[in-house]
Length: 266
Image (cartoon, rainbow, N blue to C red; front, side, top):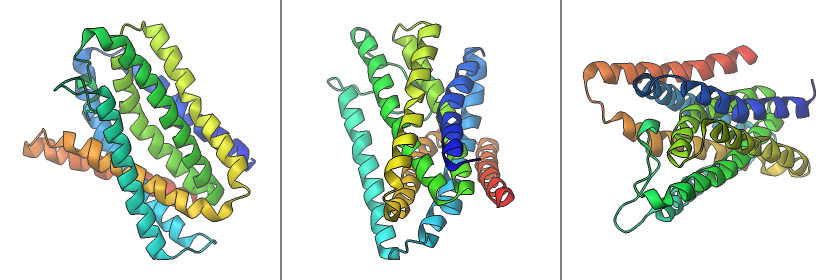
């Protein structure tokens, strides 16, 4: 199979498949979703951390276009800072007086506090998702152009963390007045941004192979930021030993999933 085929296939997996799986969770009762989502979030944390530390960063350091490890560290720090600023911009955009809607780790708790801006919130979610998916496509293409096995791992990590996020987006769209059919349709169209980003990256990066290590590092900083800043804080709301053990087990399972996938493919 050609490299382009791999990129398109797994871009669809990272985008469209996660939307379909998230939509299927809407068939569950609200109580069932509240029970299921935390499991998905914990597993996604492990997948994101595993893909970053076991795949993306090592491949960036091993890339045949050798770059200074200090440049790797600087790029990683700039990536973390950039994603912090981008998230701040999203938070400021959603603020109204003293109340703000942030990206909450528990997808089921994401609601809009002002009735008159519900429709706008739904539109903002779709615009933000499309941009996010576009960037995910670039990251998937860059990973595949470095190593097919790394591309598979990266796409799987993206799909793992997109499922709970897309479920949260569905909840917001429904809360904003979208019907289930329209919410699904618009999310599917938004997910195609992943393929668009991947295709553009494939043709552009063919001529700029030397920047691939930097893109891999930025991808790792994105994954780690999402895991540490957005997802992990939500796990701290549950402090019982049994709940903590469950969270650690699922995070470990997510890491093992990436490790086994990466090892098997090699």
